[in-house]
Image (cartoon, rainbow, N blue to C red):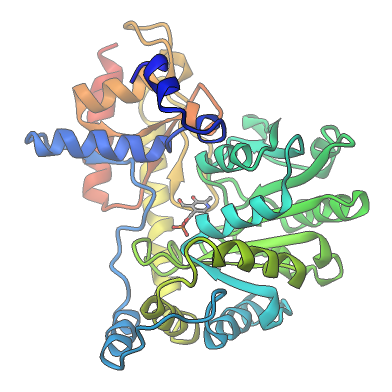
Length: 398
Ligand SMILES: Cc1ncc(COP(=O)(O)O)c(C=O)c1O
């Protein structure tokens, strides 16, 4: 649509502040090619290739059969919120009460609600780069201004309290942390995280810690800011079942925060979606309270896949790739190809990789960097090999 047509529709100023998710755009284009018969290797999707574990599915089926199909409390059932608190306490030594927890329709929804209740027009939010696509747009939708913290690739995209401190102004309202990170896979050390939390607490700034990949940490040191109880009046822990239990389509995420924040979020949610789906809440309880071996098994496989794909990508002349320490993304640097074969940007690279080599990746611009593409390795080794070989040929011919 042209700008003139959009203006004639009189859509709100706030909806024009944001863009559709770059990741979703790739999924749509890859789907289109596939529907036309192309054999696309999909490194674009940000979701596990595993099926949801059986005991979780069984709990949802039992919930349907048992007619657990009515509205629940807006913030989720007491049973679910207690299960979230229990799991987090066992795994991260945190101490949250039921009224400090809200379950939402996915982690993205919890993040959206948290930013809406904490960020006002003109507030500044410090956002480390590369960032997950939705952070920027959700902050903007709330009226906030993103203050970008450019993390150094040669330092593994490390975010430190020192680098955060340099960006704090009287307007700083919040800092977003995301460890392990989508898209870089970078993991903050417990010490760096603690120092940022301490700094923010001292300055009266909120930290929103998106920990949706917290169980996909390959450093051997799973860490949640939730364990830093003495500072908890200034941070929000955001979690999700999507990646941990291969439940992306079920839509269940949560926030843990001071009760004043969770109740404001529940007020907003009560005027929007109301409760997350009742059946899904039962499945989530089964996930959180049931056997956790499935999480470890998936984690072990991701580590193998990570090693496999990074080795493959690094073997392509001209590509460099930091070792991701968590999540399921590699973030290869493709800048040596810019200026070659008519390629001007990471978007050009991802676009041509998709159209010419039939490999779907996500261009770095959506994550705030112009030198990278994101490769999701949540797939099989065979697919990784097929995709990497196509990339080798594509880049080799430039
Ligand atoms: C960093 C990060 N946060 C939050 C989410 C949201 O996940 P969901 O809404 O499926 O819980 C994602 C999904 O890709 C993510 O990568």
